[in-house]
Image 1 (cartoon, rainbow, N blue to C red):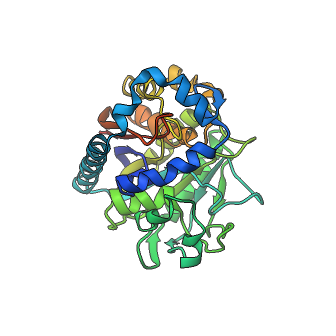
Image 2 (cartoon, rainbow, N blue to C red):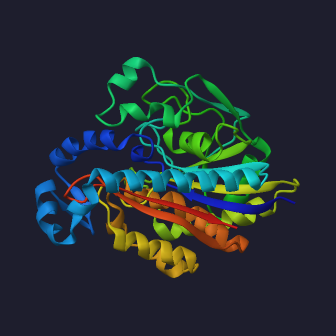
Length: 337
C-alpha cells in the first residue's frame, strides 16, 4: 500500500525569486491599488500607512534587513529541497491554485485533480513577459525552466483519488489535458512550477497536481471544507494499492499582499497543534485578499498530515516587507514527518 511519508508547505511568491532591488518595483503598484485587505477590511495605501504607523515598519525596509530576509528564504528553501531529496519520494501530490492561467471564466472548479499521463511547463514568450506587471517579469525562470519541459503524471493514483474522493462526498473535477486558459499554452503554472524548480530542483518525480480555487468567488471552498478535503485525501492515498512513498506539497501563502504576522503565527501554531477547530473556523473575511487566500492550498495538506499522523516542523517564517504600509509577502516554510 502507498504510504504518506512527507509533507511540505512553501510560499511561492515573486519576492522569493526576484532581488531585493526588484522588490521595490511592486511598491508603485501597491500605492495605486485601491483596496488592500488587512484584518478583514479594505484600505488604501495611505490609510494603511497611517493605521500601522506605530509598528516600526521602517526598520523592516532597510536594504540590510531585506537582504537578510532574502537569505533566510533561500536557506529555508534549501532545507526543504534537501529534505525532499533525502526522503526518496516515489510520487508526489502537489496542491496549488490557478490565477487565471490554466483555467478561465469558462469554467473554474472548486477542486480539480489532473490525471494526465504527462503535462508540460511551457516558457512564456517575450511578448507575454513584456505584458507582465512591474516586478513580475523577472520571475519567469523561477516558475518555468528556459525550455519546454514535460513532467510525468500518475493516472492510476489520480483516478483512484477522484473515485475515492467522490465516495467520500467530494465531487471533484478532473482534467486529462490541462486547460489552455487565457495564454493558450496548456501549461502548468506558477504555483506548481515553483515546487518543481525549487523544492524538487528540476528532478521532478511523477506527481498529481491538485487545483484549489483560492481566488475566484462564488465557489471558493471554505476553510473547513479544505481541511476535510485533506483528511479524505490522506485516506484515499493510503488506500492506493501500490507500494509507493508519497509526499504532499502545499504551495502558496501566507499573508499577502499586506503582511499580518499575528494572523500567520496563529495559523502556523494551530497547524503545529493539529487544531482542526481553529483552522476550519477561519472566517472568509480574513481571506479576502487573493494572496492570503492561498492558505487554502495549505489546509488540505495540513488535514492530510493530521490524518496520516505526521507532525509539523516550522522550518522558518519570514515576513518580507516592501513598504511602509506593510505590503509584501509573509513567507512560510514547513515540513511534516
